[in-house]
Picture (tube, rainbow, N blue to C red):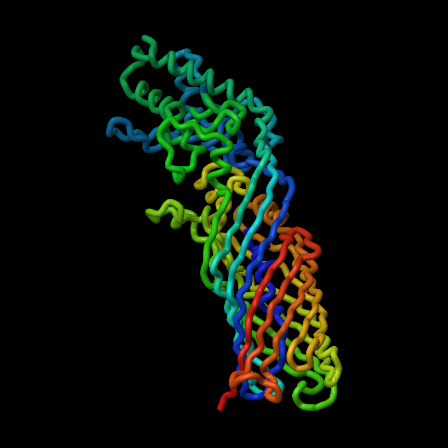
Length: 528
């Protein structure tokens, strides 16, 4: 959801456009075409692969009888029960853990085989790889905005804005990506390397053949295959290659390699390959963005057309941003398409995904008969309704290299609540040629609080919140208007205004910095 930062900052101009109240039963239709380019040097980021750490020692899984009872780590795999195991079409139910069965076998036949019980490590320490990377982003947006205003009365003006996005492209550069080894796990590695060797040597020996009956031999072979063949259900054979540096030694086992990468058996996946797959250098998209609807209500003063003298008005404003724009698809569903490039990792998000309310006021003073035609000021408070969105499956945030492990840890969806925001602006309008050419200058600022994430994994929630963080910026905007909507000096039969504008981000905190250029026109119609 980091890309929601981009959406909020770069499409926020839609609601913040200049507002002119309309008389009763008058329509104003405005269309603009804009192009923006922004850049963001996000600096260095830290991450941890705690999901991979759990494959070595999982301190969080317990049952009623065993404190650390994960069947999928290296610490105590013998906690797995031998219930209803199928060997050569025979079903055996022993009602014992592997550790208990191995201890009984050793006792009965005076053997010294590994029992797969708890290992001698400090269980107060959770061990996992840690890493860092540097990130830079740039983005380009080419879009049209259709805005329709209608005067319900002289005091009420209705607005709707619909963005049509021709191009939304993001270029992302990740550099100096590094991942550390896992400290303090060598004893686990040594145990399983030794256990595999000892068990294999025994199975190949005469003592194995001399065991009474054949059920003991079958069960012992079953245990060996369970842990030490590549496709065993609880295989830890990956440790033979991974050692204490599973990323640095390249990925080779199916527990680490995303099936969606389409690799062949025996392929080695490097850190660079994995990073490039999860984070494509460029992605782009198009479509309709979030739709904004609103109402402006005259609270104090007079409408500007009501008098030949200077007027001052204060309007109350209420807007709703409807989540119509694209949000992330389900990771698994997105890979069902035959088009391998049309998946979640290559998607561009230009929808916030939440219903975003805006309440505020706008003060306008019209100065009749002077070059300074209008001054205005505005303040808005923004808040959202929490919603459920699809989980973005990513390597650095997910704590693992495999999508299935990431989704199992976080969940297929999560609850998202965009942080509350403030918007303020002030500007003035100067008439270069009276009733014909005007120039508008404006300063505006946006502040947005931290987004809230709620999933099955509190570490992921915290990491995502830190990544989005608090956003603030200061923008400067200049517009030049050609006015042909005043009946006394209108050229031709049609009433319209045309404008060209430039917006520059002067200050950017935790967001993009750049500029936007746009042109547009407005036309008016009288309802009957």
